[in-house]
Each structure stands twice: as structure tokens, then as C-alpha cells.
Image (cartoon, rainbow over all chains, first blue to last red; front, side, top):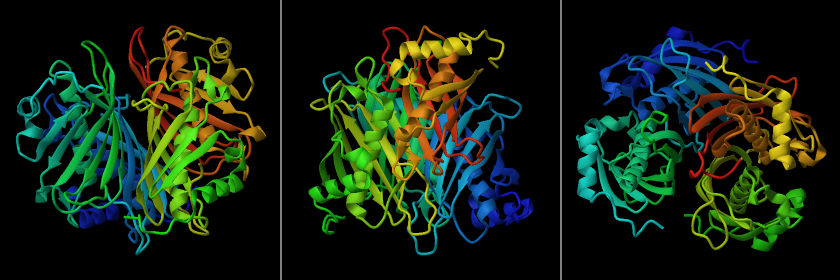
Amino acid sequence: MTSHKPRPFTLEELRAYLIEIFPQTWSQGDYCIEEAGPMSAIVRLRHHPGHLRPGGTISGPGMFALCDLALYVAILNEIGRVKLAVTTNVSINFLRKPEPKDLIGKARLMKLGKRLAVGEVALYSPGLLDMVAHATGTYSIPIRGDDGASGG
Amino acid sequence: MTSHKPRPFTLEELRAYLIEIFPQTWSQGDYCIEEAGPMSAIVRLRHHPGHLRPGGTISGPGMFALCDLALYVAILNEIGRVKLAVTTNVSINFLRKPEPKDLIGKARLMKLGKRLAVGEVALYSPGLLDMVAHATGTYSIPIRGDDGASGG
Amino acid sequence: MTSHKPRPFTLEELRAYLIEIFPQTWSQGDYCIEEAGPMSAIVRLRHHPGHLRPGGTISGPGMFALCDLALYVAILNEIGRVKLAVTTNVSINFLRKPEPKDLIGKARLMKLGKRLAVGEVALYSPGLLDMVAHATGTYSIPIRGDDGASGG
Amino acid sequence: MTSHKPRPFTLEELRAYLIEIFPQTWSQGDYCIEEAGPMSAIVRLRHHPGHLRPGGTISGPGMFALCDLALYVAILNEIGRVKLAVTTNVSINFLRKPEPKDLIGKARLMKLGKRLAVGEVALYSPGLLDMVAHATGTYSIPIRGDDGASGG
């Protein structure tokens, strides 16, 4: 339903914009936007021993962060530079232990309103079919001077 | 309802046990268990510039981590050393931007079954009344050989 | 923080207003507002065999409805007649089988912004200490012409 | 991954079993199982003025009930007659007003463990592409004598 709208970014512009506004998160190479399409995005968390908890799996907060980022990228790629979405709610289900390798987050927006966006994201270990975790998130799209929840 | 049960840990034993089993999380002084009582725990995230995102607030994943840890501590303080709870679901609401200082997580268990524990946790900036974030979490308490969700 | 604000309704006015706008829900005596205070409300679901599923407990959807109504009443009692909140997200944990009697929902708002309200609600069987269910809900407070999620 | 397992029911047996164990819900024709496959089920709520709230839309609790039932059917169709799953957590996002006609719930299990099943369900008005609501649910699969949450 949004497929004919001009995209606010090319993939390269989107990557550059995220490094510009969130350098701590995006400039170190931990996360990579693999795809960003209509109402969707795929973000990869690169394997790095520092993300792992003892036992060799990626921590719950690490998985939460990837879910939040993938949804955020999908929204940003729809609404463009003018507004800044903030996370208001995330519900995450941890399903299986991730492999000690990269983790891929596939986000899809289910609703993009003027004030709220809602999406879901599924996490996978590369090459495996079973979902590692699944989250749904709600994001507020503030208007200047408006109250928004914090987070994100 | 659980107030007359002997506690599996003193507060010092609980702190030492967490450093023993999760040294990456608990040995660096970022988190401090302030209280651990029947079906409840209070955990403090110490202010450190590294937790902050640009703008001076604590990130969403940082708040998620504190919620998860506070609930985990409350459960561990009930079930003791023999079992290891794993996070199966967390639903978190981000309500207000936290102050650029410590963040306090007050966890309370609402159910402690043989296989599942459910609790809620409220995050506050020290000295302020308004809640910064609120989460509910479900934890699986595996029995040997059982399937448990990953996470936490 | 909202305690000195004039309330938009007396308890009787609130009851009458709900019967006026949602007669199917509120005019049959199934639900009764017991209290409505600053950022809070208590709503009772009266025991009626029709609410029960075989086995004598109140159904999950019946508990969901009570949670949603109690939060809705708490919000309405803050924002008054001019706006109509719509449910955007509810996360509910079912903790224990309710008794085959009345069920009491105690709602408390954690945030009341211009566009979003977030609250939690705990369900109890009368006279019992253990929580039967717990929910958190997010409500959109639409402005004329705005997009809001449906529900409620 | 479960596609080669013998199914515990044919579609007709599944319908008959649900009428047998939950006659109040399944014998009146409000709900109809349209499909039940590996890790999935499609359940239709038939249009009936009694489900509608003023304004002509299906109520939030009505949508919650359809989500819960569709997930329940998908689980039952995997685990068979011997066990009875109970709802422990549901997180539901209301996205758009449903049309005043039938409502279709498409459920898919993301994890089926020995003790917990987790799934998601999307609600649609027939013939429309935009999702009306989306829920994720966790179900406990009790073993005899075990503690399970209530609900469902």
C-alpha cells in the first residue's frame, strides 16, 4: 500500500544518516542495514565476542537492541528526516538460544499512522529456519512540541 | 505468602553468587543489588557516561537490561542455586526520558510457580516520583533435561 | 501530580456518561465502577454464570475486557468528555484461576500524555490477596482528524 | 520442521473435539475453523450484530477472543487430546477498525516446546490486505499435577 511512495533515502543515505544522528550505535560496525524496503528492514548484528554472555549466546538485551533498531530503521525509512520516532512499547518473546554468530533482524511495519507506528521483527541465526526471538513494537512519531515517550 | 520461607541467600551471598555465575554483568560495578526481599528486589544501575545515548539519556536496551536483571534477581532470591531461570517474554513500556543519573529498578514477583515466574518492574530516576519505564516479564524455570526458552 | 486538578466527573456523572456512550457494556449491570480517583479506577465484574466457562472460571476474554474497561475508566476520568481514547496495545498475564465470583480490576495510570496514556491493572477475586491477572495497556487519545488505532 | 509428524486430528475431528470440550464457545457457530495445518490454524469469527459495539466495529475483547482461540486451535492440533494448554500471556496490538463483517484470525506457532508454546496471530477483515490486529501469545502445556496459569 505504500509501495509507490518515493523513498526518503537510498540505502547508502539511510546508513549515512544513522551514523550522523546515532554515531555511538552505528559507526562501529556492530550493526549493518542489509535491506530497507517499503514498510520493512533487515538489520544484521555482526558476531563479536563482546556481545556474548558466558555460554556463548547473545544476551537478551543484545537481542532487544537488535529488534528495536530494525524496527526503528524500517520506520525512519518511511518517515524520513523530519521526525524522530521514539519507542513506546516493545513486547519480546525469546524462543531459542541464538547461535554464537551473526544475528539477523527482519522487521516489518504493520501500521504507519501519523502518530504511531507498529511493527514486528523476527530474529534468526544466519542459515537457520527456526526463529530465535520475536518482538512487536510501538513507536510514537512526535510532532514539534508534543509529548512523546522516551526510549529507543 | 512466602514470607516465612527461609531465604536461599543473604544479600551478600546473593551478590557473590551473581558475580560467580555472571561475572561479565555483575563484577564491574555497573549494577548493584540494593535490596532483595520476599518476592522482590531493587537493583541500581550506576550512572556511567557509557550507558548514555547522545542527548544524555539511558538507552532503551539499557533500561531493558535493568528490568530483566531486577526480575532475575527477585526470582533467584526465591528459587536459590539449583535452577537457572530463563527469560521467555518481556513487555516494556517506555514512559519518560530518564535523568542522566543512576536508574533504580524495583521488581516484584506476581507469581512464582514450579515452572513459570511472572513479575513486574518499575524504573525510577533517584528522588523522582514519576516512573521512567515499566516492564512485565515471564521466566521459565527449567527442570533438568527440559526445553526452556533462551534469553535473559 | 494530578491531585489538585478539578475532576471532570463525579462518580455518578462518570457512571451516567458511560451508560450514555456505551450502553451495551454499562447499562446491564455486569460492570460497576467502585472508585475513580486521580489516575486510578476500580471496576467490578459482577458474578454471573454467563461469564463462566465450563469449570467455573471466568474466561480469558472476560478478564481482558475487565482490564480494558478499568483502564478506560481511569483515563476517561482524567481527560473528560471531549476526547475518546482508543486501545492500541494490551499485554496481559494470566496468573491464577479466578474464583467463581465477582472479579475486581484495580487500574492505575503510569503516564497521561497529550496523545498517549499508559496504565496497569491488577485483577483480584474479592477477599483474596493473590493477583488473578495483570495487564498493561496503551491508549491513544485522538485529536480531531487524527489517525487512531481501533479497539477498546 | 514438524510437517512429517502425524497430525492428531483431521479437521473434522478437531472441530468435533472442540465442541465436546468447550461447547459454549464452539457449538453456537460463532467461530469456525477454516484450516488447521502444521504449526498453524485459521479461525473465522462469523459476523453477528451481537459482537459489535456501537459504531459497528467488533469490540477489543471480541478480537482478543479470536486471537486466543486461533492460537489455541493451532496448539491443540499439534499436541492432541492428552494435554490442555492454558494461556499465560497475550500481547495484542489494535491496528485498524475492523469492518462490520466476519473477522479472520491466522495463527502461526513460532515455538512448540514440551512446556511452552508461543505463537502469533494476525486478524483481517475478509478480502482486505491491511491487518486489523496482531497478537502474540504464550501458552503453558501442563503436565499432570503441575501448576499452570489460568486463562484461555
